[in-house]
Amino acid sequence: MTISNFKQSFPDSIKPKINWARTEEADNFAKTVKLFRQGKYDADSFRRFRLQHGAYGTRMTGDYAMVRIKLPAGEIYPHQFEKISQLSEQYSIGSAHFSTRENIQLHWVILEDVSEIFRGLAEVGLTSREACGNSIRNVMCSPLSGVCPDEEFDSTPYALATARFFLRNPMAQNLPRKFKFNFTCCEKHGMVRMVDVGLIPQIREIDGSSQRGFKIFLGGGLGNKSYVGHQLEEFTPEEDLLYTSIAVIRIFDRLGDRKNLARNRMRYLVNDMGWEKFQNLVFKERAIVRATQSIVTQLDVDTTPNEIKRPIRITDESGSSIPDGYARWLKNNTVKQKQSDYRSAFITLEAGDITANQLNALGDLIRYFSSEGKARCGFVQNVALRYVLEDDLPRLYSKLLEVGLAKSGALTMTAPIGCSGTTSCNLALTNSHRLAKEIQRKFLELKLDEDDDLSDSSIKISGCPNSCGQHGIATIGFFGGGARVGKDMYPNYQMSLGGRSDGDTMLGEICLRVPAKRVIPVILKIIDLFKEKKKPGDTLKSWIHRVVNGNEDYDIKSINDIKKILEPLIIPPTKEEDPDFYLDYGSDTSYHTKTGKGECAA
Image (tube, rainbow, N blue to C red):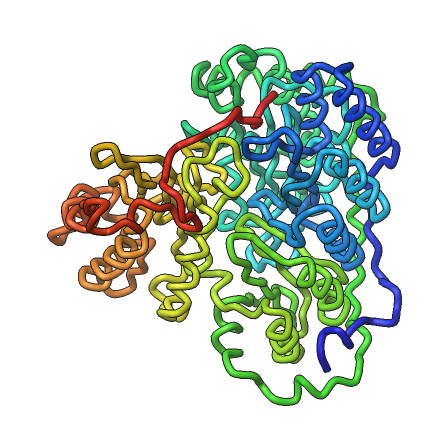
């Protein structure tokens, strides 16, 4: 049975609990665009308005926008996938892009068509409101929350409640800069130390009874200057979650630097003030919030258990035999859940890209295979189908093969993160997006996804120093720039080693600059060095971590030793010797650095 004949005839049995949309915002946006085109709305005011509603600028043009669709806690339902597929075909470029913050982006949308996308999203309860601009951005939650064997309870309802409370909330409309919440399941997942507010669920025993709460981290973040967050206190009871959040936002709103664009994220405030002083301010402000907020100011946390129901069966003989490649995919794309007999299956994308047809197909795959009736996206540009019965996995793999979504390696370093880069971003200096795809294709060809020594490592690439590709917390990270040989420019990347975002969160150490066309050989050389020098039980991640921290006792004792070995690989040839070296990936014209005005804040 082909995917075109695979359409379910029954309606979705599981509906979203929250409607995030307001239809009138689409009408208001359309009216405001007309006023702007008529010169009745100044450019700066329109820019702030556009960003507040989730329409980001597109590289070097004012006539197109990127629409960023928020998926609070990463949740998305079959009919929502199908609507986004339709909107992509009608108003975008026939594809969509998954970001690292549980958003779906539609690129190259004509400005006058943005309101039509808003209207379509509202039909399925989705919004892009506050997906950009100086507001509380999409509230994230680990895609494994609720199924992770190491979690103490599911933080998803708290993430959804936090998102609902702050969406369109007046206190979050004009912050000094963007502000981010991450909820997670356990120490290993969720990047909680690398955002403004990161939260790990905890249970504390008090007088023989269990109390829910969180371990909260404040003041982390990635960017041109990155910082690891600080733990606020040993345990924050769930009734203090909202009070703490409001207190932190009020302090940032009051004291954040509104004048210096380069230093107006909360992490700079925490660093400049010092952690102890900031921590004490939070405690004092929280006491004030607790004493003065109305009783109606509270999180509406819906902890009603999700309905888990085996999908309706359709007669289908395609799953009767196990296709080639299944064992490889099963190993590298699925994880066992704490619920017996179920797995979560992660769908590998190329740098977050997916076609409209594939989006549409995902709707059917969720209906047919996910017992919770929805999908979750996460922190690494992929999609998770959870609550898939283990005996259904071969059939799921067959269906993924039909629509080109069965690539192996979703949970390994062979699926690098790549921001949009020069394909659309005003600030990008290199095509990080295409480089990520080139690495993925080459590494899958080499079957590096099957190497257990590499499975817990990561490669993350940003097109500029601003860290949209999370390069600072990668085992091997890159951010783009330019370099010269005489008058000739070529695309170049600063490489860092040893970053990680688990319980031992640390930022990567700068190693050396690597030309774009030498990135793949350099990574392969690092892997070769590891294989030569590793000790029993080592992984690439643990070995690099040991070297970066100066704890290695072989001849490679520091990052400088790695640098010396790699330097011969990065010597640039002349343009006459290798013209391709001077071209960026995906380009057939001479490389040059060109940027526009960034819109990370407005």
